[in-house]
View 1 (cartoon, rainbow, N blue to C red):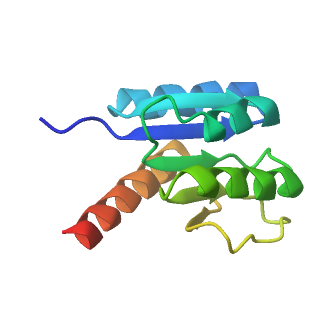
View 2: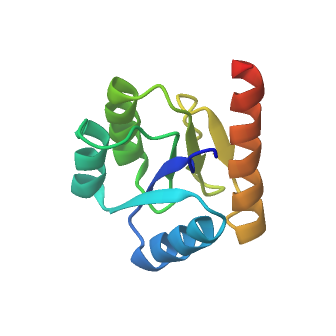
Length: 123
């Protein structure tokens, strides 16, 4: 049996964080969520838990904070990063994947595609 993929989900919008968490958990993913910068940094730098297979950054995170979270996550994990972004945001090229749409189907599709791509690259 394959262990569920472990995702760190970060947002500054509590409602969206809970919605995304429930959606991903319903699909069998193991989710750690962080609301706000301090919680996210704590999750990124805490080496005591299971390693993450993916970091998802919500579009409610200000660009400067996204940059700091990306650097903190990269310092402790080789896992890919998916950044959800708004049309007016400057695109940060330091992430592995960008997604404009926040629809549930698109989010699930993006996550599944990332894991499929990584599995085929490791094979």
